[in-house]
Image 1: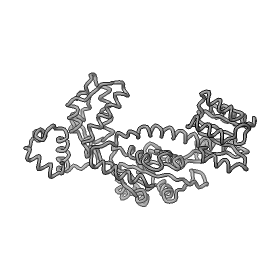
Image 2: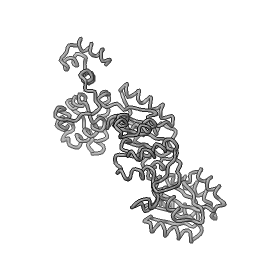
Image 3: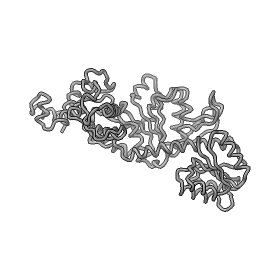
Image 4: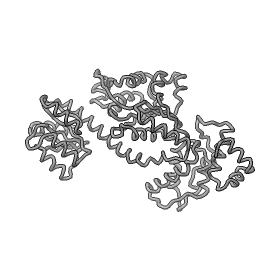
Length: 444
């Protein structure tokens, strides 16, 4: 349910729209002119949408629009105008109006415009929350040279409109990186729309991406705005792109080439300007070879490929991230003052984290919830952390060669030990041997 304000000096228009949207389960207030509308807003009434006539006595639609934007910037304004005033309506849209309706009104069109406005309002609210999170961007703070190089490439890529493919294991932060690309781009003030292809049932994916018209299929009782259309002017992030059905990949390829599509069941061609970022934890080139993914779509998506390294390849970031998650969890669960014991720090440093950053976050939150004292101990950790051999979990794409495993283990021990000699002792080798291995693996 949304809160709507109808502003028009014609009583029959106010009553018509008021009854219509009330019957559609919205909360509706009406005003006969701009002054009455501002009085309602100044009285503390918060409206999601204001639908106002252009030509009114005392205050026209543009003046009311400007006043609303000052008093309530998040309120969406839709103008009503006669044919002869379309140029004025377009001018008002440049000043911040969402859309305009042409009199005489068609209620089906009014409902379509209002529905689209409500969807954009919802996404804008999500983006405000996103912006608050990304401003701090703790997951992008790093001590890893590998990850710093990735961030440098990401900044360069963000300044363009090129399609970006993010690859890497689950839990490595691909969604965070996608959001940061949007924040670093010229589209930052427009919407960032996420489409998680894994969470959408196969027969609804096309409707979610491209929208549908009323009657397109059973249950399509009204027109629906697709996620790509909602991202017009902004960024669309297709997470787990490999889950898009083969039959739909052709339509997606056309959109990437031409920027246009038809809604499900519709004949009108929609043109949308949205920057596309995709992510997958699968090897898409391998998926192409096995016939699960279109090769032409893969090549079109793979303009810029940014690989998010697993946490085991950036162990220097493990403890700072764990400390950040500890701070977040203690605030969330009202457990101030909790700290990690030395044993927990050691386990965190030496563990390979097959579930990556997501696993680390979950382990820390679990420990905060289950800890009985002011210090988190190994008793508060899952068995898979304390005794990794007891868990069969392992990342599918990891390098399990002896050399790679030795390199990562030495790197972790060097990070944990206070001195070079202590690290050699923990490894059971002489300092001279450790020095040679450190040089061999370039761990300086």
